[in-house]
Length: 194
Image (tube, rainbow, N blue to C red; front, side, top):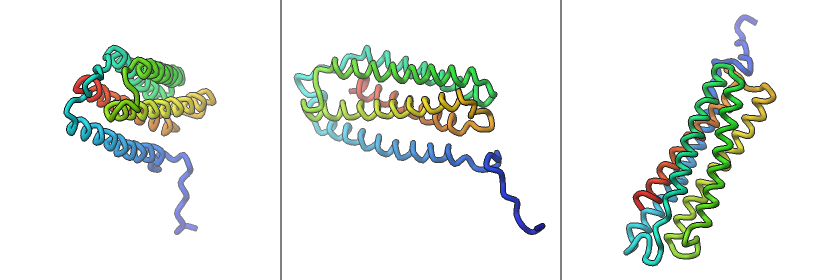
C-alpha cells in the first residue's frame, strides 16, 4: 500500500482548473471567427470605391455610445461578482452577476433598436450585409454570456459557488471581458473609423 499513490479529491485546489482552460480555448476559437468577420469587412472596405457606398448614410453613433456605457457598467459589475466569490461574499456575487446580466439584456435591447434604425439591411449591399453580420454575431455572443450568467446566478442561489468552487464564475467573467473587448473593437471600426 505504501507504493500506491493517493487519489486527489475532486475539489483539490492543486488540480488544474480545466473549466477555466476550456473557457480560454473557447475564447481563442471565437477570436478566430471574429477575425474572419473583420477580414471580410476590411477586404470589402478596401476594395470598394466608397465605404459606406453612396446613398447609405453613416450609422448614428448615439445608440452605440449608449451600448458602450452599458458594456462598461456590466464589466464593472462582473468584476464585483468575481471578487465577491473570491471573498465568499454571496451578496456581491449575486448582485454583480445580476447587474451584469441585466446590462447584457439592455445591451441586446439597444442593439434591436439600432437594427431598426439603420437605413440599410443585410440585403441592401455588401456594406449592409457585412455591417449587420458583425453586429448580429456580437449580439449572439452577448446572449451566450447572459445565459452563462443565468447559470451562475442559479448556482449562486443554490449555494454552490464559493472561494474554493469558483471556476464557473471565473470562466463567465473571462468570457464577459472578452465580449466587452470585442465590443470596443466593433464600436471603433463600425462607427468611429468607418
